[in-house]
Image (cartoon, rainbow, N blue to C red; front, side, top):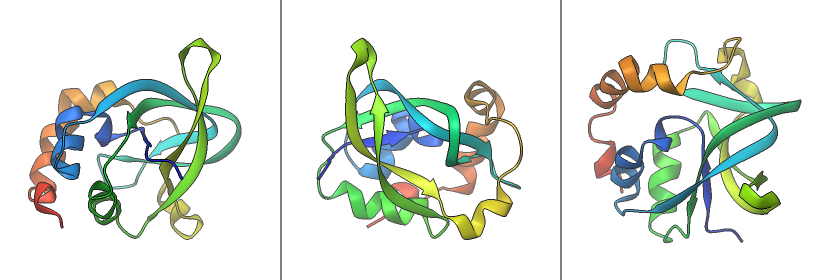
Length: 139
């Protein structure tokens, strides 16, 4: 089983990921084919869903310790399912990894259009951190 995690939203911020996982991690750029990323209604974070020819750019965090997975599962919550996927890396390489995919029963909460990471960094990240204060103390 993979020990890697593909991230495509708030967890692309290394400071947030390290607080959630309680460890600093190494990451590389990656792309997830066959999925689309959308804003979640009334939230600053996105969700992904299967989507034919779409692609999602993100970060692949490498070699997570076992202690990180319960923390990530708790952080992601009930609307997401940890799912094995194949991502594309530079140089034409691929990797099997875990990604948190929006569950079908919650997809009505996904809005149209792509979630904007640069906008999140400009004006959503500080709000996100206030709303999720304490996520770094997950057990």
